Structures are given as structure tokens and as C-alpha cells.
Image 1 (cartoon, rainbow over the protein chains, first blue to last red):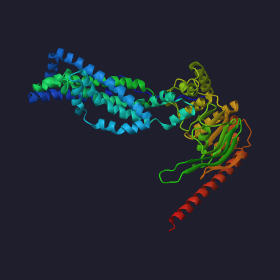
Image 2: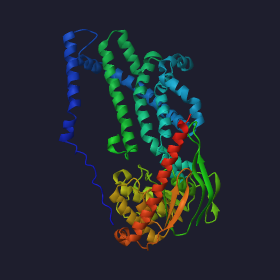
Image 3: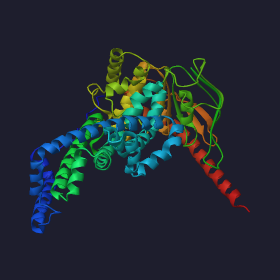
Image 4: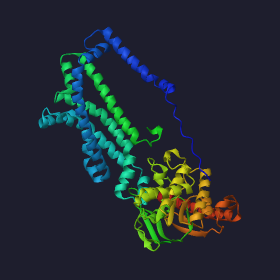
Length: 265
Length: 272
């Protein structure tokens, strides 16, 4: 007897309908932008400039902002790469070895809840105004959530999948590469997504409070002069950076977990 | 041939309660090329028995021999089909079916050729590039069956393989399994909680009883082979009805024994 193919679930074709579905996003954006401009103009206060003067500020300081952005992005990418490698790596080890998990779990959770900036003086003492101080702050902000998620990801691999591997004599290394890692990928990627936002925060805080460089320096300068337009202009840049970072991570995630059913994304 | 001699297995109970005797002094011989079905109420240890044969859980006492060699763990001559299918959702049908061979270190070309052959045999030709999530439950279990058969096992261990399927799909898969088995005559140990399924598929039915899990009796199923070509007339035959009736009267007696034991236990517990 021949098996019959189930009808594949049809996604609404992109185009008019999907654009229509996006209307709440578009509408809220228009309201926010319009509201900001109107409120800024009607208040006419230096601490809340309208959007137009913020964008104007952005254009005036373009060269300076781009240079600062370069510095900040380098810090972000360095800190984030170190965090992902260490965070996911440690998480996998703790997932694999229950004793290591038992030994470290409490400290990981402590570091996760501790305000990461309190470590700033230590980093400052070690690296001074070097880039590594900021990288270390980014690391403290973003690593621990990835450790926690990765440990959970390894521990929640379905037991029947592990039993299946055993029944087919899977060697330990194959059990990891063919069952544990693919199964854990969605949760690990969720941890990396959360860590992305934290890394951007860590970058800015590090640049504002330790080694005064990059976008953080501009924010600090601007706020020192009560230049709200400049501060908000940098905020816009940072939000754009965060969105691009999240988009990149999301893109990688989507490629790694293509097999997940659409509903569980 | 599988020889099970005096096998007992106890699991530690939950905190404070007594250990659960899943199997007690089980003796059983599974003959070569036999289709053996194992039936019993829940808690009778039938799945534990299968997992002991598979080498997934160690037994406490006694011995389990497959072709004279003691079972110390899973082995390539035994392959398992799971109730939950246990397919890898990130791999397509072809890769899933080839998984057992991959674990044995068979090269990619050889194992995929073998897998394609099995995919064809279970009626999934053309679906090799699909992901399990795109298949119905019945089709997923065909993949599970093909994966087990791909390693050319001497013994096929099936743990309520159709238990998670709807009635109609189950019926079609029973037919399919019989057709494949009649062609290959691999030794099968098939766990089920369905009396009809046990009789329809088996050469012999092992009836187990709970607390502690043990073999109650073994029944020969006299109906002729091949059966896959005329399952409907097999099911309407007097032999079939008589066998199912016999199993049911035994099972019903077991259920009332269990109830009586529970009531006696409660009565003992409430006494001052």
C-alpha cells in the first residue's frame, strides 16, 4: 500500500496580505515618531528635543559618531564572541557532568543576578583604560544567561532520544554530535538571543563608566553638557545596533533550527 | 534464539515506598524466526522484559542469552522500534533510517543505499527528503520500523509500536508489518496491550501478570500463515474469536485479583 503525503501547511504568500498583517507595527511606529516630534515641539524644553533636532544632531556629528560606532562595535563583537564561546562551552560541560553542574550552579546564578557593573573596578584595576576592560564588562553582562540556558538545553534532551541512541549503540561522541547538540540548539540559541541585548547594554555601560570611549563617551559628554539631542541621537544609533545584532542572531537561529515546526518558533 | 532464565528485576521505589518488583523469575525462550507477542495489564513488566532483552536495563538475577551469548548491553543483532517513534526531528527520513548503520560506522554511500531500500519496503518511497514533522504518525512509525530493519537485526524488539496510533492507521501498519515479516521472517518480540493485536500478529502470545511481573501462560496461536493477505477473514474466524476470548477471561481474572488485593491491603491498613 502506498503512503499518502500530508498536505503541507501553506503559509500566506508574502505580499499584500503580509504587509497588511504588519500594520500594527507600522502604525505604532508612526504614532511614536509623530508623537515624539509633536511633544518635543510643544514642550519646547531643552531636556526633550523633538525628533527632528535629534536627527539634525546626528547629521552634524556624523563623522564623530561613525568613529565612535567603529570603536563600540569592535568592543561589542569581541566581548560577544568571547561570551558565546565561554558561555555555551561551560554550559555544555555543566550539562555533561552533573558534578560540575552541582559545583557551579549556585555561582552562575549569583553572577546572573548580580549587577554586572559592580565588577567594573576590578577590571579597571587589571586592564585600566584598555579595551579589555570593556570586553570584560560585556562578558559579565552576557555570559551567564547563556550558561544557564545551555545547561537547561542539555538536561532537557528527551530521554527517549537518548535511549534510542543507546539502543543503536551510539558511541558517546556520536550521541553528542547527533542527538544532544541538535536537540539542545533551540534553547541554546534562545540564550544567545537574550545575551545579545545584554551585551549591547554591557558595551554602553562599560564605555560610559570605565574606559570612556566610543558611543559611551559621546553619551557621557552629551549628558555632561545637558545636550539631550546628542544623547538621544546616540540612543537611536544604539537601538539600531541592537536591532541589527538581534537580526543577525535570529538569522543564524532560523538556519540552525529549520526543522522546528512553525508554531513553536 | 533468545533464552531468558530466571530473570528478576526490581526498581527502587519512590522515597519511602518499597522497591517495585518489575520481573520475578521469568523463564522464556524465543525461537528463531518466531513472531512472539507479549500481552498483559499495565505494571506486568512487559516493557521491562523487552528493555532487558534490548540490554537497556540490567537485570538483577538470572541470565539472558541471545544465540548463546549473554546480554550485557545493546547489540547490533537486536534493533528496537519505540512507541514514541523517537525519530530525530532535525534529520530527514533518509538520515533517520540510516542512523543505526551510521552508528556502526558504515560509510555514507552504503548506508544510504540500504536505507533507500528499506524506505521503499515500508512504503515511503519518495519521502526520503522529508522531515519527520512533515509526516503523519503512521508514516513516522514506518520510518522507525525501517530504521530498525536497516541494521539487518536477528531480533526485532517492538515496544507497543502502534500504541500511539489511531485505530485505522494501526490496522494498516499491522498489515504492513505482517507483510514485511512474512517476507523476512526476522525474530520479533512485540509488546502490546491489545488482545486482538497479540493474536492477529503472533505465533505465540506470552500473557504476563502484575505484582510481581511474571509470565502467567504462553498460548500457541494456531492460525495459518501468511495472514497479511486476508487479515479480515483471520479476524472473523472462530479461532481468532476463541483466542481473544480466552485471553480476555484470563485478563479479567487478573484485574479482579488486583482489585481484591488492593481492597485487602486497604482493609489491613485501616485496621487499628
